[in-house]
Image 1 (cartoon, rainbow, N blue to C red):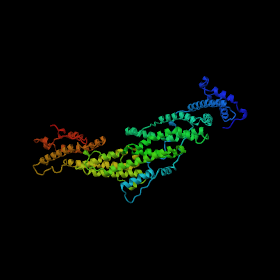
Image 2 (cartoon, one colour; image 1 turned 30 degrees about the vertical axis):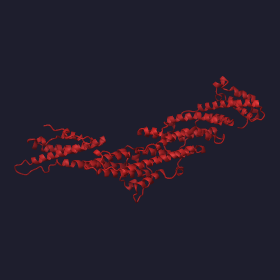
Image 3 (cartoon, rainbow, N blue to C red; image 1 turned 60 degrees about the horizontal axis):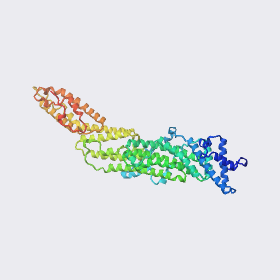
Image 4 (tube, rainbow, N blue to C red; image 1 turned 60 degrees about the vertical axis):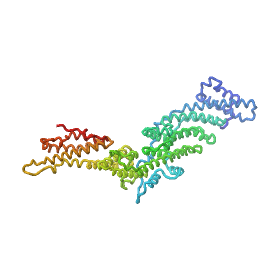
Amino acid sequence: MEPPPEDCRIPLDAAEKIILAWDSTACEEARDRMIFESDPQEVDRYLQAVDEIQRSLSSTSLDSQSGNKVNATIKIAMARLEDEFRNILFTHTSPFETDSFTSITVDPSSSVHSSSSSSFNSATPRSPSAELGDLVDDHFGGGDLEDASRRSSYRSTSSIREIDLVPSDAIFDLRSIADRMISAGYLRECIQVYGGVRKPAIDASFRRLGIEKLSIGDIQRLEWEQLETKIRRWIRAAKLCVRVLFASEKKLCEQIFEEMGTSVDDTCFLETVKGPAFRLFSFAEAISKSRRSPEKLFKTLDLHDGLMNLIPDIDIVFESKSSESIRIQAAEILSRLAEAARGILSEFENAVLREPSRVPVPGGTIHPLTRYSGDPTTPDMEFAELEGKTPFALHLIWVIVILQFNLEGKSKHYKEAPLAHLFMMNNVHYIVQKVQGSPELREMIGDDYLKKLKGKLRQAATSYERASWMGVLHCLRDEGLSVSGSFSSGVSKTALRERFKQFNTMFEEVHRTQAAWLVPDVQVREELRISISEKLIPAYRSFLGRFRSHLESGRHSENCIKYSAEDLETAVLDFFEGNPVSQNMMRRRSH
């Protein structure tokens, strides 16, 4: 602080009067007015008075009484400047407009789950454990945190957008006040006032961004849909906080406190944002430590990738030595998120490989292993189809190859071939349904392979129909019913009665068993019933129309022709509900 020219200096006693005139503890008028909202000349006069008082403190010509008076005056001046500093800062503190920075949340380095260039060449198949280690490490990168930091250093940090939180004229006033408070030894008070205004402003911005402080217990209690929403919101909010909010807060500290002492601006910045920064990262930390489950895999990866893309910006915004703890926290959380994703994949792979059950799932419904996988994907891909897949995608595909292989093995434990096909149909449909419902999976797999999966679904359904209904429909053929002879009608009534009885027996058995089988998906269940009816009902109606007259004139014809076509249509509606039925529930044809 340069001393003013001699002709601009004011006498000590005049300086004391100016300071005391603005003493809000003694003057009612001073309580109702702010110096820096007054005439600029009044501001200059007050600052000159403060400068004069400060110069007098270093003077050796003051006696003890005068020294005490000057010390009391400087305390009054500092209290007043503290109020002025607070008022200027508060007046120019406004809510953070998040909608103005939506472009900041669009990261050019998109999530790992999107398509990226990668090659896949392997002459020799490797064990699942080896694939797990190598492929996932390729995704996250092996090595320590220092290596990870070096790998990320090439990323662009052009996404940082500093904004002016306070107008330049107010910055000038705040610097004028801070300079004098620090020169008088009131650095701590100045920083406390700054933090007292700016911390609530950051808290308000956090509320607007939807940032919450959640413990591991809070996260465990959330429904998955709620947690998904919070993860998406956090990724967007974290980008805004690091690249705009914290970066702009750092700029403001530099504008006010730079060159006022050793790292004063860094100290003020850390004092203001350390708590909010730890609060921001605590959410990602809680996710990394929460209970692992397959459905969390992609959102854990999204969280990992979002934080990884922010690490270069974090390193710049929190570059000072005093901010090292924030950089370390972010890097450690990134490492834990990677480990959490690895753990989810490992647990899933172990569940697939080691699932020992040889007992068929009742009714051929979806196997718990398929449900456990949460978001299954793609077996039996050709090497050409694997080109361009990310290492993570390749590993996930590899794990699901094992899943489908395991399921196919389990289908062989069913004694009834139709039920084995129904089991595979249910499980393949579940896989298709999950892929179609997940944008990440669909993008990872691609539409071509999704068509292949749907082809497997149709194949399983067709195999079920052939195994179940070929024998039943075989009863409705004409072959074997005609007789030769000049006195015959051309149709053997004995053979016809046996044919109807054979059909009734076979259909009743299929109805009895398959009503207890289960197709969980309503749409698939209905489509399968329609397909059965389209084959069965016209064939039965035609057979009935051709041969009914040969038996109706005879005795006990109702024992042969037990059902109408409508009865069969109604009976088909019992199929795949998972509920056993008795034959008494079959609607009998009335004569």
